[in-house]
Image (cartoon, rainbow, N blue to C red; front, side, top):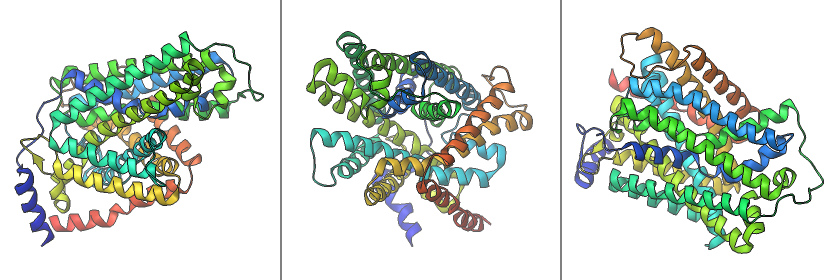
Length: 454
């Protein structure tokens, strides 16, 4: 009965056709806006002080951000080969299916729908809520209310149509980058350098270096979402590689500039001790209006990241619905709006449920970090391995872009992912085990779906 309702209702409301498919509606600049919008989220306002605390000197602190850009570039080269050889709206889902079969692909899609992507949406929504609440509080649960409103409104915008979703993303990314440049200008031009250092100076050791890289790569995370727009990107063979390389170059330059401004305006020791490094910098540069401005900037920044994450996340849910009959209601593409409407709605419902979970724990941001990290890095590692497997198994496939220095580059990428998988388990709390448990809970659904197909 429920399946019959699901089959008929979307057709009436959204005019969805199962035969409709993604169309190349995204230009080169749209891809850059999406990648930059996802990566430059809340991380650059949260992690620099932690990186500074683990660095022995200003030069080391800046070098860590360059190294993070280099590591991201290694991964981007691997993804560029996969995305151009196998352009598909499912992204990682499709690569894992071809390399390891439908069972592995199902677990990834299930984990992405229930843990990875929805957890990231909720995480970013909590950051938005925290900073929006500094501008205007909405009661005792202000942060959660703002988080829920942001998810609902941006999901609705993306359901209306891909043009509206990408236009909003482009402008939010422009506002974000422009605001960050103002922070850099404020730090370099107005903040007085060489402040007296706070008593505790950052220590240096191999362990601290490892923790620093964990935070650096957390800030760089998200460029892999480009894989999910490969079926909608015009001239994908050329624009996928270009958009990844240009985006990571832009992100690395911005991260270096803003960290240099932090160091110039506050000094490394004061930067390491700061609880809100960007607000402290702007407060020193232009006073309290600067602190208000940075709260507004972070709210705008996270809105851009939420919108981009919603946009790309629903594409995997759509691919899941195409391949597994039990989730067929997700595999419907709204022809007129050119969006996976049902997939967006389900993604929104799960993300809102996670906002509720974060509200109950009273530590929304931290809970979502713990919840998503191990599952994310496990499948990221598996995607790197899939490149090696597909090179051997499908040598006949045309590869418009081949990763340089094969197999060293993908092996290096796998090593980076394995290290971060270890770190995500070593440095997270009980939320990590909950996320893993939810991912494993997909097993009974997989068995049920396979039986229905027999």
